[in-house]
Structure formats: C-alpha cells, structure tokens
Image (cartoon, rainbow, N blue to C red):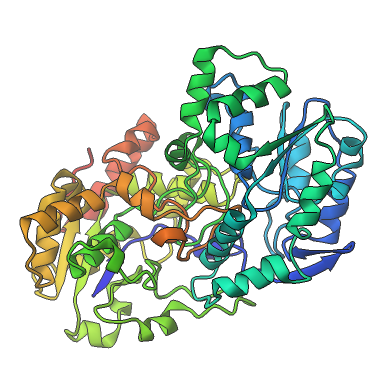
Length: 522
C-alpha cells in the first residue's frame, strides 16, 4: 500500500543542510570524519576562550550531550526554559558542507552568551591554546570502550540506512584500524587522563554517572562553582534522564539535521505533522499482527520521490523498495496525478491523511526552524512560504487535498482525518485493519493502540547522535531521532496571532468553497 500526505516543505532548501555519508580525511597527523576541515581545526586551536567557558571533551558516544545538558541546567539553576538552545551540543570542529549557508559552530560560538557550554571530540593537544594555558574549564567523560563501540556502530548504521556494515567491520574501523577518527580511543583517553589531578579538568566515568546521577550532578556543580539546593539538584536529575531528554532532544524529519525545535526542543522537530509516520507505524503493526519485533525496518518511512545527495552512495528508496519483502508500506508526498500508473489503475491500496492546515503549518514552521538553527524565519514568513506563495512545493494544500478527496468513495482509497484519529485511535486502527483486509483480535488492536501513542513511538523512533539522518538504530529504534514533536490537535492557537488567524480563515473559506470537505479548525 502507499501512504500519501501533503508536506508543506521546501526540500531544495533543506537538502543542502543534511550531510551525506562521511568519508575520511587526514589532517595534522590525525584521521577525522570529513566534516572536520583544516580551517575548522585551526579555528578551534585559535579560539578565544572565556574564563567561564566549560568544554565537554570526549571521544564519540561517551555521554557528550548528557553532560552538556547537565551543565546547561546547572548554569540556569535547573530552569529548562532559560537554557540557551543556540548553544547546540555539536562538536566545534565540525564545518558545514559546501552550499550550506549556515555558520559553522566555530564561527557562531563567539556570539553565544556566557557561560558557554562547548562540545568537542578533538584530542587534548588540539584544544584551544588559551584553554591549554589554563583559561576556562574542561569536563571529560570516559565510557566503557565496548559500549562506545556498539553505540558508534549503530549510530553509523543509522546515518546510512542502506549500509551493510557488520559489527565486525565496525570493530575494524573504530578500534583496530589506523584510520580511527579523532585518534584511537586509547590515545584520546591517555591525553585527557594525564590531567586527572588538574583543578582545571574534571574527568568523569560514564558508568559512575549512571550509577549515581545525583552525585555526578553535585560533582559537576561543585566543579563549576555553582551552589545548588537539594531541590534544584533533584530537579536536574529528573531532567537529564533518558526519558526526559528524549522529549527535548527531538531531532527528526524526512531529512534530519541539528536545529532548534519548539519550546526548547532541540533538533528538527516531528514527523507527525500530518500523521504520515503515525499511519505508517499502524499499518506495519497491523500487517505484523501487533508484533513490533517483526516489523521490517528496512522499509523506512521516507518519501519514495526523495533522491540521494550528490556523492552519497546510498541507494534511493525508489530503487531499494523493489527488494523489500511484501507486504510493503510505501510513503509519498506527491500529488495523486503523479502516483504510479499501476496504482492509479487500481493495483494496491492508498491511505491518505488530511490534517487541520493550521496545525500542519505551525508544525512545519518549527520543523523548518529546526533544520536551520541560525534561521531568522518568522511564522509570518512561514505562512507566506507554505500557504500564500505561488511556489508552494508539491502543490498548494487545497489543490493537493482536492485531488485525493475526489477518491473518497473509491474502494482502493482510505481517507483519514488526523483529528478523528487522535480522538478515537482504536477506531482508526480497526478502520485501517478492515481496509487492509486484516482481522485482528481485540487484544491485538489494544496492543497496537498502545504501541502507536506519541510516547511509545518516541521510544522506537530514536537514533542518538551528533548528526542525525534516517536509518535503523540500536535495538530496533528507527530513523532520525524522535519522529514525533507533539501531535496535539489545536496547537496552532499557541502561534497564530489574531490578525494571522483572521486572514487565514478568510483565505481558507475562499479556497474551500465548492469542496465537500469539513475540517474542524479548532
């Protein structure tokens, strides 16, 4: 079957912001991912350090983002809303890709307000000269190498969903090879371990932090000379659990890249803008009788019409899908007229999800902002780009919906309203199962309903990493991290001004005239 939903998206502007598969570069005696450049390394080395800077310096996959979040919360006395999300927890030595207009972090960071939390994976000798000279502070996290290697393997696999890399190959690449990025773990750790008695450095063991997170928060606060009450410490401990951080570090999207989401959520927020991935997951669970472990995660919930970036040797989905096992669940955002001829001829089935346009536009505005942390895009500009402009990609929403709405009486099409699905998810699961010709027991229906809540799906659609891209993650977790932002009906009220709402309503009534479709603009 094919799932279709209207994206309010300018993909040409987003694709340039997503890194292609990484290669190797050899600079200044060390191997690096090709996100690192000579210019970036020199910029880090000559970086102007402030006295109150704190640098989180780790080998990859060792709790970097965890400690950065703890530091931010300590500096802000546990007040999550005061955390400066412009200070993205991404390595300062990472440059931007050619054609990407964003500022690299080594250029953006000088304008960040103090105290700054700066993240790096470079060996100690590559740290800024001023930092090595005693200015600022350094926190290093050391993690069990076995766990780091396993996490690194799944991270890299997640960056390239078509990768056939085995764990044995990962061991060779990240442990035994002469081309280990950021220097071999043993050398990296040894350099920082030599500073274990320095008052400027705090060396933490990841496993000790997990065993006693409260003690770790207190230790870091003392190192940063911050006096916190027991109440604030307890609050911070709660805010840095895996479950809590997943709510904020919500990096997602058809094309994922670091960014800032709504209400302080970090990343490109939510692919539940119109329910595409929600219905995708429901279909997969129905076809597998509610058994989440049997879902074929090679069938990534990304549009078939998306090609790969130049230089990326991944197989585009329109080629990869041919080898997927049946039954296949295929996603597209194309207008109905551009669907496969065989599908238009009656072969296969189509499910379309229609969502309140106000909520979709608000959600996509935050998605776009998340794709570009330096973006100054206002919501007013988003309204123009995705609603009033004559350059709305994939067709304007009204034309797009009209094409699929014309098939509402066809047996090959199932048209769903997002709001109705949220109101009665169990009924929606049964409706989809009936459409797919699948008889499910009440127990299986209930199980599926439990598995497709926003909270539950966040547990599966989550691949951690400094750079996120669609793929298959650890323990069956799928895709770019957290494909859901909020999924709340009527959330548009928190963004639209009265004037924007009045203009929208007038435009909406004009465009919807003659279309027998009623959507609650709650």
